Image (tube, rainbow, N blue to C red; front, side, top):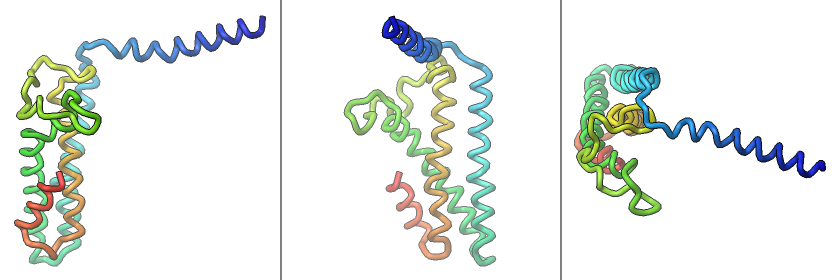
Length: 161
């Protein structure tokens, strides 16, 4: 008798754990989630360009402030281009192996206005993830501020992606 009650409780608990996944399997656009992700995207981008650039600019000598600002801005441009060309596809494309996503979404191939990633547009999801791809090498700028040539910094940041 006790074992049947325990089995019933375990079955009910397992069913309750599965219900959120069934509810989230819907591919319906959620405006609130989309607005929040867009806001978060803007906040992360503001952490990189004015925030991180001016923070590192305050740590260097006066003559190198513009250099640090340009390094952060240039990293944002280069990583954005790399993300568009291959980064999104490698990170989030359909899996060709256990290690990477492949190149089927290269140049955002198949990413259209109506495609969804969960319950937000895929373009919004890609932009949100791109901001983290931008801020990661921009954080490294502080380590080699005033110590490395601009071209070497761009090459290092591009190859590190």
